[in-house]
Image: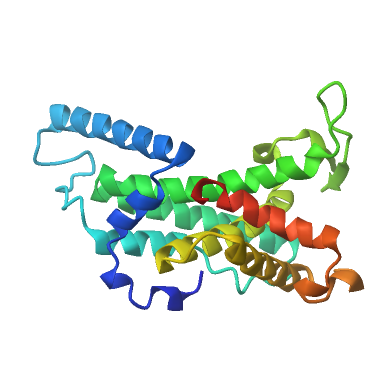
Length: 255
């Protein structure tokens, strides 16, 4: 998501907005669980250190600071427009940078108080969940009768990895990278639409699918086959579906 989306972010009541769009399905329960966990932790800290301070040694600021929540979430939503084709070493650096930004945002949010922490954590968690789901979608076509998957062995630095039979969390970094990039593009589009008050409907699905293909070409255009180096509307139905299914996965809780 680019900076211009947040031109008027100071005017947004992010705490209220996020409460609204996290109010259905499994995200509602996840938000409730996180709030309960944070409240329990806060009570433990009060009992141990007194009501005036937290473990961090800081006084707890107001828990409804919507401007600070906006800043934390905008730092978390990642601009993917510059993600051109990269080498494996750059992929690892990008993943490390994303993880570092996420951890720093979470630490700052924790210092602010549990009420704001759930927004940052849920948005991070949701994007990662979509990325993991994309790996499961890819390998679903390789499912065998015994519950395993048709092997897909990749050689990395002298080691063999059967990526079809590895969960997303156990994949080598270079194979996590593309799923995470696709998930970030789709989730950024969803979050942007929600912030702008736009409906998550068929029109959104088409626009986000077009953007998904554009960003995929930005990253992979150097090696993409000629049949895929075309605008979205000129792709085959099969190739269009590859982009559309990513967006649909990100849309699930919001439709």
